[in-house]
Image 1 (cartoon, rainbow, N blue to C red):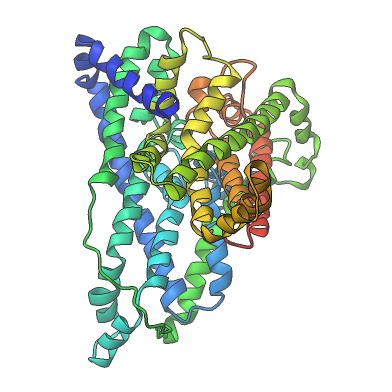
Image 2: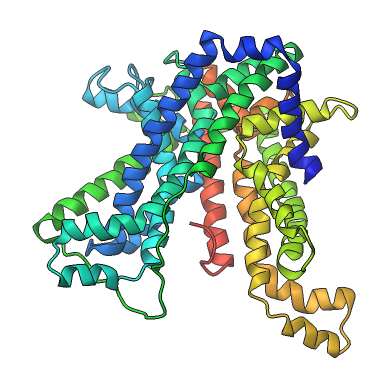
Length: 517
């Protein structure tokens, strides 16, 4: 873990520190300040909107008599597994000020996705599930008798929400809000696709521009990476007062009756699902069947666009992404399994540090980690521009997901089971094959898919690390969109949507609903 994830981060810091005057010149330049302020504005705006959406939806689907709650709980988590740059492609298709599908209905220029507001909307829709899932879990575990006691004391619905429910949700809101803030600051795909046309520049996009200019720009990129890493520290600095809300007494929550507002609330949530989730996915899928993007006349529909999958670069990108994701998931499961074993089943001193080393790359912006990998593997092995460095990046970034999943599985296995097998004479591989593998297999499979899904569609690190011949789906889609091939980009985006959503459904089926969204 020191070699994979920590050494690259140290090299970024050393590169910036060794730059001397370049560091000071870079971080004090007007362009750096503009990018930092834009990143801060985007991160704060996205966080506020995502927390508002996620908290409201979690409360409505947990504490009220809203109809179809089971359907909404599943549907509202779909954006969690869809990469933000796919969402950006979808909303560019819908709200391009000149040829967007929605603007054809509302009038040219009615909506403009190429703006700070448009980018904030796209990222908030991508990241609000962080808040929704976290706050929903907090509400489901909280003792509902606290709210019932407030009602018995004469408090109305809004008073209970303000004085009891919101304080109970506050720790979850702050924790998930910190994750949204960090994810927004480190996002690359959506800010590049939307921000470039809006002439908006952010730290992540400036780092890419500096690094792409050649090795001479690595000092500038490392200096900017240090500024970006500060944003990643924000979630670690946020603290909220926690309350003991899980007791030994089981009780069902008293649902808030929405009364006359029930129909309006149902309509609002249904409209949000339709506009925020289903419409973008439908726009991407429909565009993949159009000869000319934006023209919905029957004669413009065709299947010929899927011939783009046979083009050398696109076909190579799909094969590279699938192969890299599969190998990275397998390697992460092996390494993550060892980390989980040391953490859960041994008393080795320093085992908590090991899990911390695995978690640090996951919490680090992908741009910063990719920059460190370039510095670490340019010499002596010269892995830059190869599939090997992409594999290293994916394993380093996502091994913590596998370790967490397998650790949960190991934690449920009582030590008496393998001890009984040892007493009966089982040893080595036989013990592993007959006891540990069958008992932990669901968690191993879940960990494999948890790494495979984000690695398959990864863009932030890949765009810095990939080269001609090592394209991935993410980098190829970004190139197609950037160079004016919206239909071919939509074809690749549709492939990503189908595979990621299909993998998630398979994960839920194989794990009995324990994992996935």
